[in-house]
Image 1 (cartoon, rainbow, N blue to C red):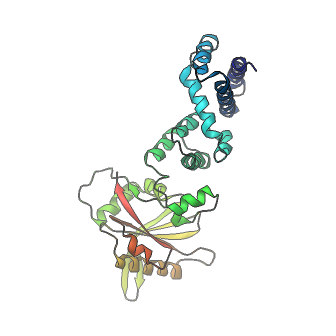
Image 2: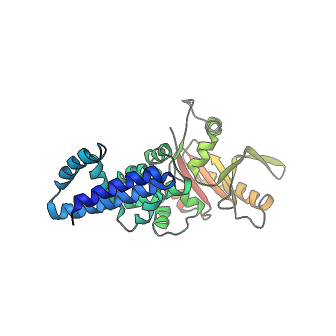
Image 3: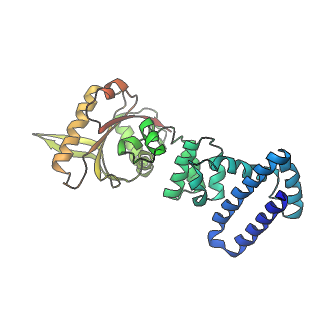
Length: 296
């Protein structure tokens, strides 16, 4: 096989296709670059790694400047990473810019997660950059990672990241529970996206009457994906056992007075300055989770 001519023909055909078939040019480009990566890998195995230098010089002269050594090396790297069976199904659903960003992650698990996020949520380059920069995958629980790798459906508590990053746009220095609530409400859309998918806002200081006394839930949310209410309590201290008792009462109240028969049981999220894994370990209600917050 004449590897150079095969690669050159694929590049030229893709250039022509992109000018004629604009609606599917990204898919064709990705498939073409994957095939070129395969050919470069095979050619390198036969003729040595310097083959990229030789081919790139000729392609720059005969086809165009963008097919330089760096571009060919990326194609080869792209093939090497995405030929893994865990992530190969993503190839036909991502654009070239997304593929380049994912290659740098070097972990199939991370690529699989962020690649699926691109597909499901139709992420822009900037949105994908933000997710990677915030280490979204790394902040998932181990149970969530295990389920995602096994293609099992994670539960809502699995998907709430730790720590939760909260945008402190106005740079508040001293943080009380009221201030923390205010910071969240100033960026409520960002906060709900940080929690995960399907969250909608119901209200702050949501009043519930227990006996003759009113209590107030810091934030009451609803998750349409998991069909349940979500009680959020904010704490600017280390997690304490009384925080568990408090949120459990609020969750039970919502289940008894707001939840309908076709809805799932309420989830409770305690967002605190510092977690206490020992308290959570001995909490019998697994609907309750605690997450540390970080202001960014």
